Amino acid sequence: MLRTRKSSLPAAAPSRAMKQTASKKKRPYAGDPKYALIFRTLHRQRTELLHGAEAVVEQRPGLDTFPDMNDQATAEADQNFALRIKDRERKLIKKIDDALDRMATRTYGICEGCGENIPLKRLKARPVTTFCIECKTRQEKAEQAGG
Image 1: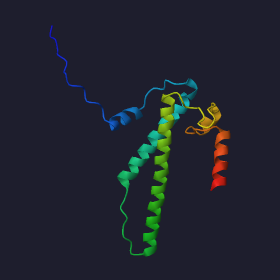
Image 2 (image 1 turned 135 degrees about the vertical axis):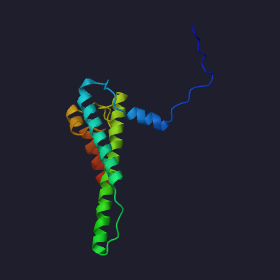
Image 3 (image 1 turned 180 degrees about the horizontal axis):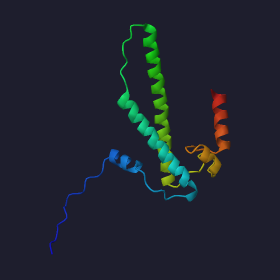
Image 4 (image 1 turned 180 degrees about the vertical axis):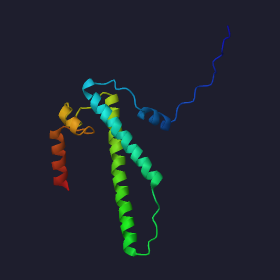
């Protein structure tokens, strides 16, 4: 029987980017069963947003120079609008990733304001939420009063 000698060199640690990519791959849900549907919905939504972003990057036309100033301004306004939408989608992907991470650490569904459970009905309506209705209402009132 052949014996193999183990290398004395330590195995290379995976890079942070590799870890993030691996952690974002679809994995079976092992958390609270009442959140399984939300987990699948979040994964599907994340996948759709990423595919949409890839399509925009691949098909993104350069701004043409138009002889008419109004046409040029319209084209630039349309591009700015599209970029704002993509930025909002990027922020939503971040919120989805955060929600999936909370599911993995079993902290999903716990209000960051009061520490109580967020009602399942609210989580189904807004799966990326981190606050219960009462705490979110208080937060919005404070923001309105301050700004």
